[in-house]
Length: 187
Image (cartoon, rainbow, N blue to C red; front, side, top):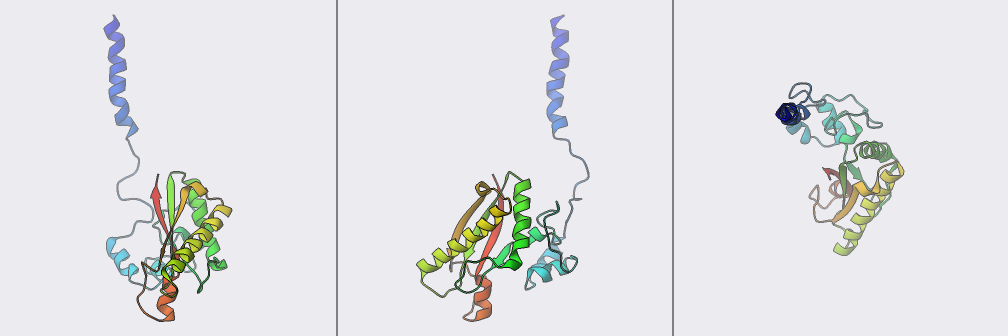
């Protein structure tokens, strides 16, 4: 009589892992999917707006995060570079809606983390530029936490002038190098 009780229990234990891994939908139907060729072509364009337009995003796609994939070019969280003025760590007003969207994303996705990588142009000493890169990253972190992101999900790092985006001794190259890059990961 006791063996009859164990059979259904054993069968249930064996089938439970199979039902827990079941998914809905079909493979490759993720929202915001873009072909490799489209991404490669768009990555060579000069700015986030041009890349977004090349991938079919509507012009002026800004605002708060609306549940889209972080790789969806129509989503404000696809913009992950914040630029700074010369010798400044002040976040410009034009980037605050983007940072608000990133903060909302982090607030909703508790297992996601963000590294804020601070960069500078080549002018100034190595020590000064490391400090400025850190101040820039901390400024972005402050704005994101004001908008609701958890400080525990965000870490900062400064690269100073060590990883330039653009080579050159001119203002256009320097302007591209004065930045904070948002890099996502998970816990």
